[in-house]
Amino acid sequence: MDTIASLFSFITTPVSWVIVQFHKVYGAVFGPDTGWAWGLSIVSLVILIRICLIPLFVKQIKATRAMQTLQPEMKKIQERYKNDRQRQSEEMMKLYKETGTNPLSSCLPILAQSPFFFALYHVLNSIASNDTIGVINKSLLESAQKAHIFGAPLAAKFTDSASKVEALQSSLTDVRIVTAIMIVLMSLSQFYTQRQLMTKNVDTTVKTPFMQQQKMLMYVFPVIFAVFGINFPVGVLVYWLTTNVWTMGQQMYVIHNNPTPGSKAQAAYLERLHKHITHRGKVSRRRDKVIIKAIVAKGRDRNEYERKFINGLNKAGLAAQSDGTVIKGEAAAATQTEDGTPTTTAAPRRQQPKRQTKAQRQAALKAAGEPEPKTSLTKSDEPEDAKPAGAAQRGTAKSGSGTRSKAQSGQRKGPQRPKSPSKK
Image (cartoon, rainbow, N blue to C red):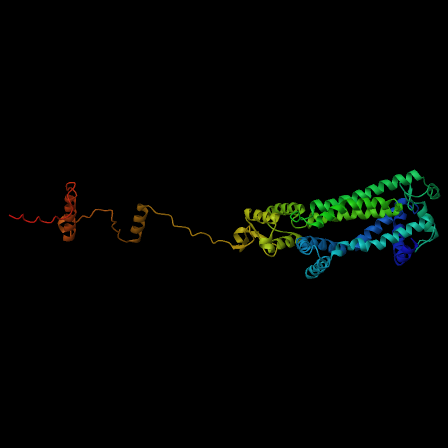
């Protein structure tokens, strides 16, 4: 333990200073020797650290999603070089370099938080050992030893002996009950956080070993916390329970507002976004514009939920644009079809003029002063003698053809050859 303390000695002084500053504020409200003053100081320390780690948390989300995207390619490499581990590792590193992905980025928040965790553990352990540390002097040390959280001293552990607990002015039963409840809550919060990630914010269309690994961690991490938690002081349990609750709430916010593509959380988010857009007729939030812009840019590579979202907007008379905005269908210059290809909005069909009746046409001609044209349906008033001779001949030929049609059956039609005279 001394080796670990020496490794993190550079950070124990800043951690103790932050705790003392928060203790001054809460001590003025709840009293300097109360568990509320010291307990809330530890909680405030956690919140301050987690706020500083938000940029790393954002990198963790991006790294996790990048790893999920690369899972199909990683699986191909594993199958191709399953008998050559060295070549497999080389191809994996090449894939990470080409895509700019770092597998360790998902562990950045935990790695960055670990120095503060061990520094706090060393500070509380020194309080239990009646040793001053950092800026915690003798008077602050006595005040911290008097602080109890639900009857358990701040520096007591589940594995402490009865004599050590009595020296901290408490009973072994109270310490074990409080520490056991906090260990259970800490493990449950860790399990729920991991389960929420696996059930709501994972691309269900990709089945890879990475998902199996995450499912395994969902059950392993709570067990690890439970095993090591019995050796943590009450103050460290407060620290770890607070950071688990913070992580759970932070993850719920991310899942609700920026879900992983292809996950159940994305389906719920796009459904809410569709209702919001159809109700207002526009996109008002910048975050929604970024997501819509990414969906439109995918084109044919959209997943099922994204295609359903675009089709729902089209049915509502709206069209998603490449800049993330949404306009009405009549004014849209380009809309997106189901397969993602842009189609130009069709021009309005040409209206055919309404057909007028004969009386309306005659009235229009009279108003214009033009003579009424004779239609082919009216009978000609000319006498039959005035008809052209060609017409009469056509009529005679027509009557002749009618006579020939009455020829007897079996007789050849048309003009007959004259019979040759019989020889006498």
